[in-house]
Image 1 (cartoon, helix red, strand yellow):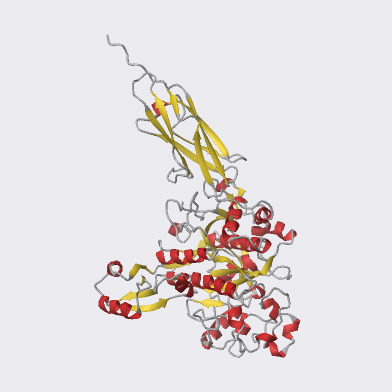
Image 2 (cartoon, helix red, strand yellow):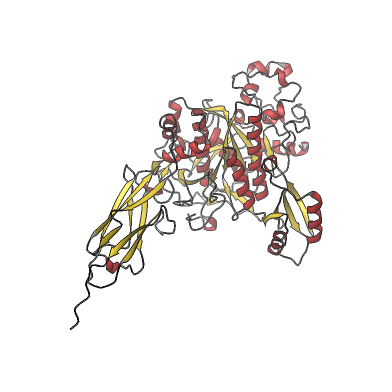
Length: 631
């Protein structure tokens, strides 16, 4: 890493305060982050096929008059036989980016080309006022305290990735729970002198801070930043000897001891914004240490993957690189037969539209049994909640099976005014308004946003994985949603219709094995009826929270409200404790000769009736009227 840059970052660690990143609050006490500035220049992401050699790419770049500013060919890409992904800029002043995109798309060796969009944090800031953790112990909190009472406090074997603005790895409430890359440190000359004091099969910061290692001069440990303990800042100090200038784990990153900074392209992912540190505190602030706050996991490991700058914005290509980094770390740990268990990444950011490059990296994570937990978004430019089923928000709207999208709740159980929602595209709600957590420089403060709700879910999944080490990613996700507590404000607005309950999820994991995600069946009482009869439709669901709202609509060729004795062509119902509800309609005998009609009955997850669930049921209506006798 660049040593002068580290010095700058370390200086920030000692002096950064809340107000240095977040301006003084308005009189209302709440404000949105400023919109991130656009990228400095228009960039295109070009995904080449595996057959596109360096010579082929160079020839096309010369022909199209373009310049490559960054090349990504992560180990995860290579493993999946994916070609090089390049960040390209246009050198023709009279050509638009969209035109260049078309020109690249016409090349046989190009899989796709798309804009390198800007991503940004999904949070709201306010003046620190709350001195308790309602997100863990409030009535509408995560129920983490219940899990703690049952001795579920996490494990140093469980690893999550924080794709964000970095982490203050020197923080008094975080330093023990920062990930240490076993693949990098195993090749160091003094590694054999380090003792695994907690017998978890790993060398972590908990081991480095044990008296056994601290008193051993051969362990090469020194408190270089003089804060009273060994943290990542001490290892990254240029005098420490922990950096050997080599890519020991052969993942493409030199001396990545605790993660990577994809913004400054170095091994020091220090948080110069504060957003990532706040997220990390919710997931894994050290518990039972008589200091500050406690994360959902008292002990865990978090990888700092810095993709957002101090201004809170970053590039899509950095997010792709960070996602692949975590996937590769998981594969390499498995290949080394480590005892660690990688769960997934926390993604409290959003911006731009659909990206094939990011969708591909999310799939590569899914192929390795990894989850992608993401913020539902904060209502766009106006800050008022949007329906993601209608107005798509990314990355929460990716349909990959490993994606979990999270909405934000207030301490009273209401959907936060800024929180996006979606009966199909958003999975569940979690505490997100006025959340107290860690900030850089040993500080603490309260922030709001779906950014704050997301780490509650990520932390819950880490806690669940520690309690049930053999559970697959899909089992963790299914159990998380099945155990969600039915919540009025989320009924019809999230897939589960409920909010996070980590204690219930752990109990379910330890009891009945999790089943599949929600499904819906719509069954009419008959497939064919006569005019004047009553048709009753039964909706049956599984794995859906009690009280979840569903909406139906009647239609068909020639079918109007006049065909029914009473009621409406549309309606709604809420599932009971067995996951069912019924509705009935009487077919009117109108004495008209109309021949047989077909009635269609459809079920929807949203009140606008745009998102159908289950299959369409049809009923044949026989015309029992007789033609009148001519005069």
